[in-house]
Length: 173
Image (cartoon, rainbow, N blue to C red; front, side):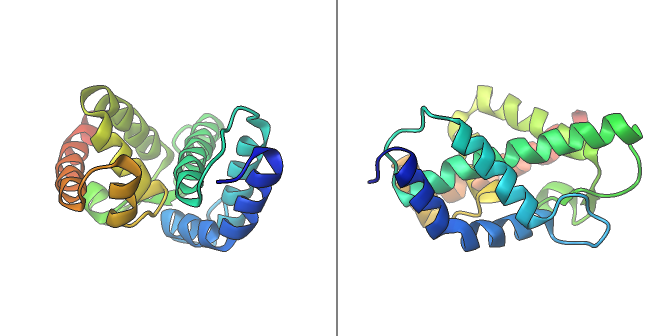
């Protein structure tokens, strides 16, 4: 465990390369994209650095809160892009193949995923956390199980159920 801003800085420095790798996986690079993995990680870090209420944290907990911050950055970028282009053609991120059939997602799709995740969080908070940690945070099933204090089997079951539910819910939004 680390304390305060210095501890958060140390965690960020230690996790930086892994966060860039995770951001690359979420974004699945294409030269026409407007948000690079580096920008995504840095924007997420700026959000975290402004939050003085972040408690003492472990590296795993830091990854969890960084995943949430990266999700927020992606959602805001999608909203800005939608407002700017009103649904213009360039893709922003690529969803997990099970959620979007391997197709690249437009800002409307990112916003639909965010709305569906919010709805899932009201219905089944743990499943929503599993999706957020897995998709946005790139955590392994074992890490998610540890973070949520459940078995890996439970996490895998939640992941399958949440993906199936989201595949339908994203289409509704």
